[in-house]
Amino acid sequence: MRVGLYFGSFNPVHCGHLIIANHILNESDLEKIWFIVSPQNPFKTGTSLLNEYTRFHLLKIATEDDPRIKISDIEFTLPRPSYTSTTLSHLQDKYPSHQFSIIMGSDSFQNIHKWNNHEFIVNNYPIYVYRRMGFEIDNHVKAQLKPVDAPLLQISATQIRQFIKTGKSIRYMVPEKVREEIEKYNYYK
Picture 1 (cartoon, one colour):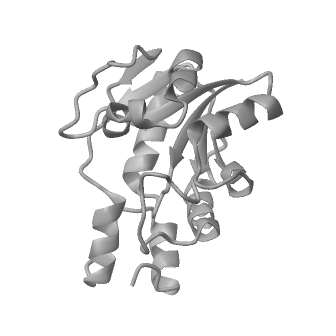
Picture 2 (cartoon, one colour):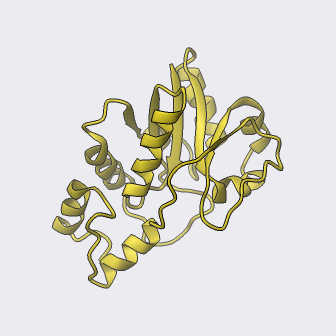
């Protein structure tokens, strides 16, 4: 099976994440996309990170009606911080018949040379890169690059958290079920 791995904090998942996943499924030969919830990204710190199980749950309810998408908690049991190279090795051992690719924005790809064991990643896995505003796609690491012309949306999880803190509406920025859950439990306040 050809699987695209979409790594992230998803703090919270928003419509931009889901539109990109849908676009890549529609426009590539990938059969499934697995959202890999990262409990601790080595490049991100801060106290606004919601518990990983809660973020996993929000992703689950956001995608529960789409059989092409799976939500994975594989990094919850791996050493922290979460390194993509470690996760890829673990997934390849667990699912030897799968062909994995990585999905990321051009902002993340621009910094891939700073990632732990980045040579292993770029030499062994195709990378689907979608454009993020202000970040061109420059294949300086000679990756197996697959540029994706996905819709550009100016939605960020940081902006959503700020809206919640200041009492502004996040309607239409996140799936309705996710918005209801965030409001019900006062997440990010």
